[in-house]
Length: 281
Ligand SMILES: C[S@@+](CC[C@H](N)C(=O)[O-])C[C@H]1O[C@@H](n2cnc3c(N)ncnc32)[C@H](O)[C@@H]1O
Image (tube, rainbow, N blue to C red; front, side, top):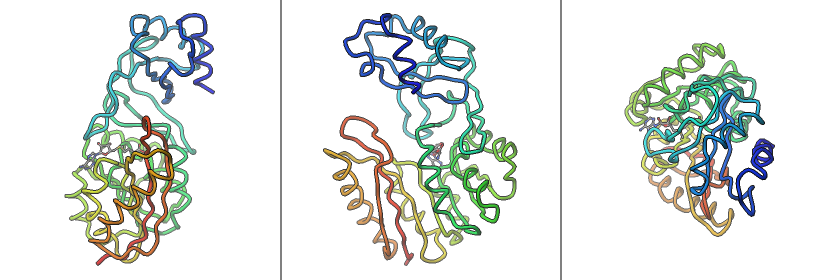
C-alpha cells in the first residue's frame, strides 16, 4: 500500500522502465519513512524524498545507506526530507514503541511474527528474550498475558534505554524484566528458569543455541531465527532445520520441531524461524 503510494509519487519523475521493481524498499516506522534507492537515483535523492513526503502521512524521509550491520543490527540512514529527527513512536499490536532508527534495530516487517509468538505463549509462562532490542516481542507478549514474566536481554545501551521507556509507556513494569548484558552472560546468571526462549538474532542462532536450551527448566520451546539460502522457501526451511537440529541435539532431546519462512532477505535468501520443543540434557 505504502510502497504503491511511493511508486505513484515518483511516476514520471524518475526514469525507470519498471519503477516498482527499481524502488528497493519502503519501511514506515512511526512518523518516519525509510527508503532504499537504486544507485542511479542517488543524485536526485532529496527531490525523491520531498515527493514521498508530500504523498505519505509521515514527518521525515530517510534513506538506508547500509543494511543492518553485525552486532547491534543498526542500519545506516541519511536524511532526505522533512524533520531531521531519527526518533519516533511506532504503534504495533496495541503497544507503542519509542525507537531511534539511527541507534537501534527496528523492523516493522516482523509484526506478524511477533503476533504469532504472542499467540503461542500460555498465561503464566516464564519467557526469556535473548536479543530483545527496544522490547518489541517482550512487551507485546507481556501486554497480552499479565501473568507471564519476560526476561528481556540486549547488549546495546541505546536499545536498553528505549526498552526501559517502552516498559513504562506500555505499563508492563515488573512483567518485563530488562537486562543490559551480553546474552551469554545473562543466561548463565538466570539459570534454568524458562518455559520458552526467543532468539531473534540470526547471526548468533547456532553459537548461542546451547545457552538458550540451558535456560529451559523442563521440556520447553526455543524459537530460533536463522538466515538460510535456497531455491525456494521449502529448501531453505529444510536446510535450516537440518543445521539447527544437528546442533540442538548436543544439548537435549528434540520432542517437536516446525519451521517456516518469516520473510525474504535477498535473492534466494530467507529468514526462517524454527520452533523447537526441547528437553534439555
Ligand atoms: C535483530 S535485533 C532484535 C530486535 C527485536 N527482537 C525486535 O523484533 O525488534 C537483535 C538485537 O540483539 C542485540 N544483540 C546483538 N548481540 C547481542 C549479544 N551478544 N547479547 C545480547 N544482545 C545482543 C542487538 O543489540 C539487537 O538489538
